[in-house]
Amino acid sequence: MTATKAHPITQHGPLDADGFRRAGHALVDWIADYREHLAQRHVAHLPAPGAIRAMLPAQAPEHGEAIHDILADLDRVVMPGIVHWQHPGWFAYFPANSSYESILGELASAGLGVQGMLWSTSPACTEVETHVLDWLVHALGLPDRFLSTSAGGGVLQDTASSAVLVALVAARERATGFASDAHGLAGAARTVTCYTSDQAHSSIEKAARLAGIGKEFLRLIPADATGAMRVDLLESEITRDRALGHLPAFVSATVGTTGVYGIDPVEEIARVCRAHGVWLHVDAAMSGTAALCEEFRFVNAGAAHADSWCFNPHKWMPVNFDCDVLWVADRAGLVRALSVLPEYLRNSATESGRVIDYRDWQIPLGRRFRALKLWFVLRSFGLGGLRALVRGHVEMAQDLAERVRAHPALELVVEPQLNLVCIAHRDGDDATQRLIDRVNHDGRFFVSHCRFHGRLVLRVSIGALATTRAHVAAFTELLLSEAAAP
Ligand code: PLP
Image (cartoon, rainbow, N blue to C red; front, side, top):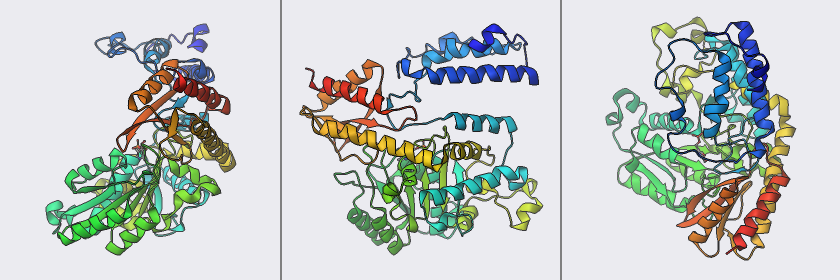
């Protein structure tokens, strides 16, 4: 903690405003130093399990400590156990970008410390959010039905996992005529069933379990060779369930699956959903940001027919975790499914019907001012800046794919969609695993894996804010030479 070394803040116990100012400046310097020199670190060097805890005292301190000592422990205790997600060589999972602007938005949110459960508990917390999510409808080219000026609207959730749970509960209530809200699932005359592809994220299954549908009644529809849901199989499964007397209520389509970026044919899925009166949710967690660019608007296909749609600015858009946008086409249905109004929350603004109370759009009651960081990022980068970021990552991924295509030992498992490149060694899974291990052992880069139709896949997800062409070029050389090595 360099800035505090010269002038240690020795005051013990709770900080006063001046101590906060000095400690805050020191911490901001520390973050800037960390980010500036990140490329020199090993991306993901793990300590032995328990090594971090072993550095912590057995009990919490009885007497307050000096903030100088607390901040110094970021280097001593925390850093040895940090995996560097903001590293330019971060190609694992999907990115979880964090920009300076979003850090400042987060700080401002904590500084204000408001709890925006109702419009009346901090009108700015609600109105900035509503407005910025309307901006995004336009910026991403999504349908007007998601605008707050229509019957729908957007809300920030913590994660895509919460978004799908909220959507599923609203869908369940629509299908059962709000009987299950009133009487539990026993109140639904028929068994509620849901559908997603076998490539969908695990959060869909978790939502089905939490919403009382049960894993058994979440039908996993097989995907094709590209990772996209087979619509013919979806349709036959829904028809079969109806014949059995079940109540098909919810389909979650994915645009950009977690494994290989499969893109479900949302338009065709929407046709099936309409024919059977089923709620259509779209999980565009990773790919949603791409729609900032006209040429990638294929990710929005079918959006006009979706009942709900979510994407994660905390992935590709550089808004730090957590930040998910959920839009619904019918906010009244969502609010009816989730609203409970005790006396202590009654107020005249709510009763006027002229305000949004976001507590009714989510699972928890309380909520922080999460929109600030999104607002800061959109304004500081501008839509043009964000588009340049997306286009840059896609170009880098396509360049890498071109080199892989030309390499005799490697193949692309699927044609790369946008910024994910899925690679296998032609000699089989053991060779692919060896390649993953060697690339990660180098320390400058970090990739992860998935299994697709039984085959081990090395995934290269190019989307970190700090990644440049030079990093991808260096990675490409390492990958290709290791692939050729015995
Ligand atoms: N959906 C998809 C397609 C994902 O890839 C992920 C995470 O990577 C999720 C949902 C879950 O995201 P979250 O952590 O926001 O719940």
